Image (cartoon, rainbow, N blue to C red):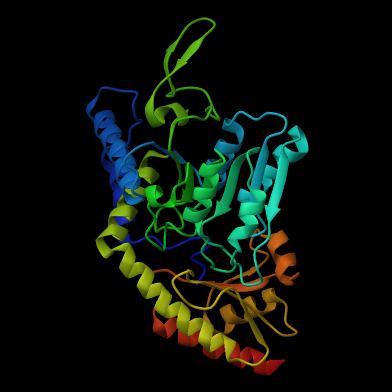
Length: 376
């Protein structure tokens, strides 16, 4: 129950990566021999699969090493000027918070932070009051990695369009669990990670509506020509993928997309929502347990944070592991401002689901937490 940190990979994903390593391991875009051609084609095919998975019929889909790198490519690739403004929220993972704080501290970019309600949901009027014509970028999480709440990004996108502002959506927790379509979301940038969606670690994705960012890195693979004192950048995703990419891992991520699409993201969402409803109901009924986040429903993913009275979250997580083999995350979840906002200064225990969890898993968690609560 720690899939919000890293999910498990199904056998087809592992086999796809093994096949690359054993049968056609070669660099991409750099050779004309048979192995290089096979690797290059399969690498390009993986890009197309990933783009299709998020409804991206246009724009550029770039492979990164994680969501953090994808967000930093946006932060470093935009052209910033004095007076520009960034709007983000208290809900954010540090990866979608610190790049904007750094721009504020080092370059004087104005930064506004919109607070959510106690359950992690937003009053849209706060965004209406905060986003203005000076706002160059709005950066929000699609789904909270602590509270499980889903942000109405399409409504925020409408506000951005009214003020000619760009919208970045951190989809690290949404893309693996609910249907996501960049056109419906209305965003300019979508960032997410492969290791949270049944794929390998070391893979992430940046989708951009227009290739309007300066590349973070320059070097081999991202140029079409070089002279003694000048270089010309190539087109397509190659422009943003300098150096040798994680070829086998990207192919594995493409296979993870195949796996999720074979099941259907609506089925994944419905399965997890049913388990989440039972988990919240069960944990909320245990004396001494506080559950954070919104109530069960469609505006929630399978991330449930809770605390047990008089016990540090690390203690609870350790007991769950040792006593029942239940593996959860504990602590601040890379969301220190949010922890202070909800009054959980020591952090929370976080149980997070994926498609491989079942009703027995949830019942075991509830029963074990109830036993722990009786100990204190």
